Image (cartoon, rainbow, N blue to C red; front, side, top):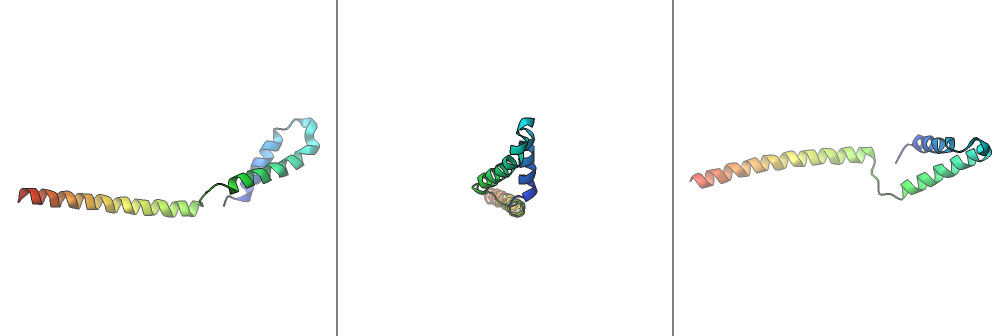
Length: 83
């Protein structure tokens, strides 16, 4: 899940875009914007950074193993063709 400060920062930035005459509505807008962004992101199928890093490592190991097997297969095919 994303850090709550990301939502707070985004809502403050959106609130800063409001014209100065709407200063009273600014706090309410920031709360509503934070809630809307949090809800929208909550509906997405996201993974944590930790999960992403784990899967990246798994992919790297799998790729290395596949390359080793491809090299081994090439040697076996070359040996079979020579004999």
